Length: 300
Image (cartoon, rainbow, N blue to C red; front, side, top):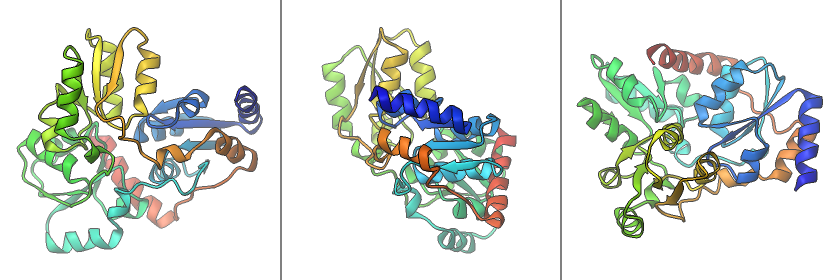
């Protein structure tokens, strides 16, 4: 492992590359990365870098977002088959159909969507800023895509009636109320933090509902010493690493995203060696998709 890490460091310097890793990635990938964070945060980090090559260790839509924001850079992924089931639940044609069914509505698309879907949308949002985006658009009729559970959470937080699509994250819906209750019995002093993609009945049991970035920040700042974490288990490695005196317990240890785990250290090395697989977005789609991202950034 040490030999591979050293090769990656050498290649990274030689090729003027930067490695970005999502919070759900394997521990060794997080350790090899220059930056670890959520999808949009990493893409914004990519836009600031002077590196010529961006190696995005995440899932495909995240690399697409980086390619949209950084059109002058070469964005590569270690495993091109690392997709997102929720992003696959909607496409551009379905967005156009939704708009036709609800004339006068604007489309707010979760960042967890393909470039084509973003191009058909009016605004993007993240799990961290979805409530803020909708609050700024309170005078508008809104279609929220694709995650119905995040959309329902936003609707409840803002009091805004929103047209929801039927998408969801298969990993977050694996976390059930019984998992939270069992974890609370085992760790009675722990605070419960869950992701807004979780089921409504799970969020109702939480002390805090936060994005992955929000979880990282809250865990650092909270005086609490124990936390039950309701999201993909990969984040616990970073939480524990950055807060060694505190304890973190997965709400459901089986909430593991196989797509996130497709990126291995060997694949990361190979992708740097061969500068593959490159992720590109057609200019016409990229320009329209970027507009929805830029609108979001202006609001928040």
